Length: 226
Image (cartoon, rainbow, N blue to C red; front, side):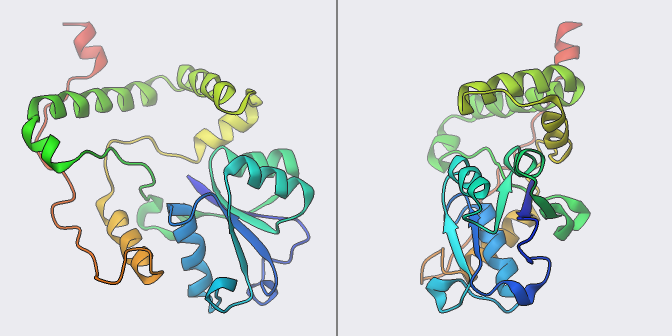
């Protein structure tokens, strides 16, 4: 889950107000950055480095939070829980959730990846790895309360603090935990990244990028019950 969060008085609800504004995404060429720049292009806008007058800053999420708090940026396209933190803790306005722009309101932002040569040479290890991931996905979806507790514990080690329950609840509600790669969204991201010049001058191919070996997955509950 990712959202475009803006300062309350930024005027970014209207495209004609983007001139001279400073907007941020966590990392150049990541999914939030691609989506932000694509959104600008779709609305006839360019970033400053492309000859436009919208300043796109690529900075880490904690720094985005700090700059947003100081009023040094006007908006940010960020993932959860940062999007909800900007809204709940810094009085930001969620202009939209990115899933509103995708078919069935779903897109892929995190994938399991592996080197093709390793996958070919170690099929059994790969099957176990994917099987373990599927079981983890099932467990998270079947145990939401425990998952949120573990999530908050992780955030403490990652950010140095836990988050209030309402932020955890909201941020969790804005993401979908699935083992489906949502392939079409990956192809779309590649097209948009290529249009932005991120994939080089020689073109690109995604042929064979997805692993389609059929794997029989046994749930944790089935394993437990023998």
